[in-house]
Image (cartoon, rainbow, N blue to C red):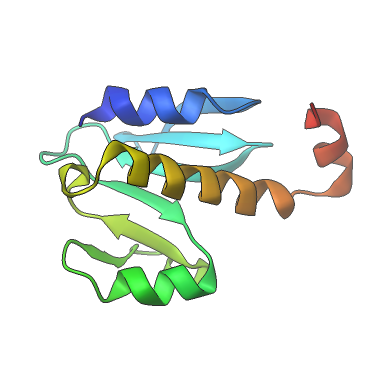
Length: 115
């Protein structure tokens, strides 16, 4: 898998925007809140995303996963090489992150993006 796989998964979700932050990270957001981040110039391709409390603890203890730098306190996980995942696993993690972030958006913004 590559960055285009991540882009395809993220942009298939409603109301997603993408932009480049910190000069080298591709960031996917809902309601201006990020839910998935990948490095543009990294090899192997890594990805970070928000998880539930339970999944954060589980994934943090698996090889190839670690708490995401700067975002771990918000239950973000870094997958150091996305090729260790099946595409369906990555889709599941990204969709969960999207839903977790979307649920925490202010009501006014959630109302604007409700399908």
